[in-house]
Image (cartoon, rainbow over all chains, first blue to last red):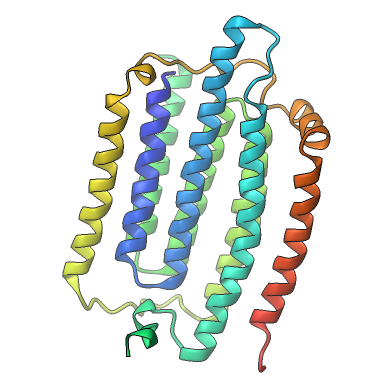
Length: 111
Length: 167
């Protein structure tokens, strides 16, 4: 399987996430689009780790290259879980203050 | 066409279609459900790439924990009605055009790269199995692993402090 296919798939998912962040106004859906972008990057990292392994295994058949990339993906997931808990708490606080999650109401810095 | 390629195309179509449905659906609950479908498709990709540990962690952490958190928040706020008024159509079109331009720029940059055109993936080996990943995690990366527990503790305290009623 060529690496190109995985890169284009991850780029397409990332672009869908960017378009979602730019078009939607519901704060929760924007947050979900950010999660989608994180997952696209994770998929790309795993694909690149396998590419690195494919290059290393030609020189040394017992190579374990590419393990670090998958650990990076693991740490990205850990940080994303922490980020989601704090972000959702912020959205709950915003809903409690302005009784909406529409980001167009968050314009107090404009006035 | 081998079974791996058929599975790859099927999972890719599933991920892209579910992502588009997530962005376009009006009801936030449906958006969450479509995003869970995307996460399952990405987990399928991990299994195809022989990254089995990450596939299981992706299902448990993302589809299991994070999405349940999203669903809880949406249902607590009673947001499952469509309350997103269509005010400005032009900003929506501009956002779609901006996303499409980003996609075009990325694909053009990939097509420029000569080295990537012939590069193949190797999905064999033991790289993604839990045995090797666990050994590396607890020998070379044990300090970041322990620091991430502090991060979780601070995130938990932060979520409680931010979400607390009154001040």
